[in-house]
Length: 465
Ligand SMILES: [Ca+2]
Ligand SMILES: [Ca+2]
Ligand SMILES: [Ca+2]
Ligand SMILES: [Ca+2]
Image (cartoon, rainbow, N blue to C red; front, side):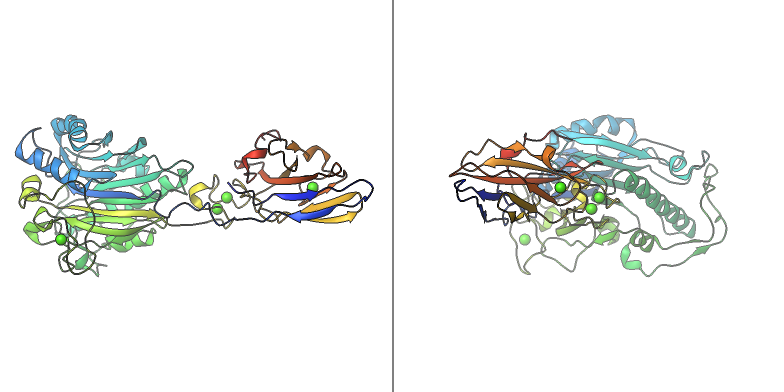
């Protein structure tokens, strides 16, 4: 750690009755962590059921999951109670310590759940039903629950939130209507998630059952319920007409960006459902995240080498798999991306969303280190310390240490006649032949608490607010 706010006050003999002031230099360059320190690989895989543990399809699925080795592997088509009960076994076989499975709600799921396998602890999960999102208890208008998990991030950072979906399949207008309503429900789920965790990166994955290459959309436009809906289908009373089929613009309007992905070393092939040559499986990120790389995994493309063209290849775990294993595992391919956080400061208080305890309140947040401590002599007996205000600090602590004695800092806040301003008048003079140095920290009386001193030396010198 660097004492970038350390100010040194060199004492002289009393006879001189003068003090001279020395700013100890700051090497503030350092503490930024590597950009990818909290990066995560996320994947989306429609597994076409899990199969029986130990079966060929199960083993192939395990092989692909291990080869891709996502930090958060989302899967769709966990079919029936047997698959549900086997998700823990799949996690174990694929090398995951944590996992979570969605619930079945309403009548339209086809008995299919989604799941997440995670290397990081699952802090929370929510399986959102239509009724819960709608507010209309009779709403029964989404196929599968929208499933969100909160995953532990690096210390001090807001959790990663991974949302996975499996939307209605089919190309009829009625299916498009149902898919658009599901997309609107996803946006509602994102609103709920952001209400709780406005600083978290949100990753949306799943089988969306619409090829984005079919854009532009914008039609059909539904002014009333389409024919041919299931008899148990109930559109939530909160959904208003017209309903316009424009699924991906709706997600973009909600602040999401789709990540393009291609087969290894083949920028001409983005297909995730080979039987129909369609892109059905998608990855999206919100404003807090971006991809450093993406790929659609097909064992037949996997030779462990980044062949020309450069890129379109990501490192994987273990050895390349035999061609055919992807086909044995599922009718879909596994799509994955390496995701890193982007700096975002929504309330412009200088504190990144990822560490801001009040992401939307510019008055609240742990103040950053005070790195601008300056001093001037007021008169022979008085030194004025001053510093630049930290945006969220309501007041400041001052600690004073004897030069050369690293651990002797004492709190001087009790001698500051106004702890809310950005100055401190030191009325004392250092002992002859010695000197003082100072540390200042900002304190947010809201959720942020005390900021760092910039040095461990003074950590205990003022009572923690
Ligand atoms: Ca290759
Ligand atoms: Ca902020
Ligand atoms: Ca804030
Ligand atoms: Ca003051």
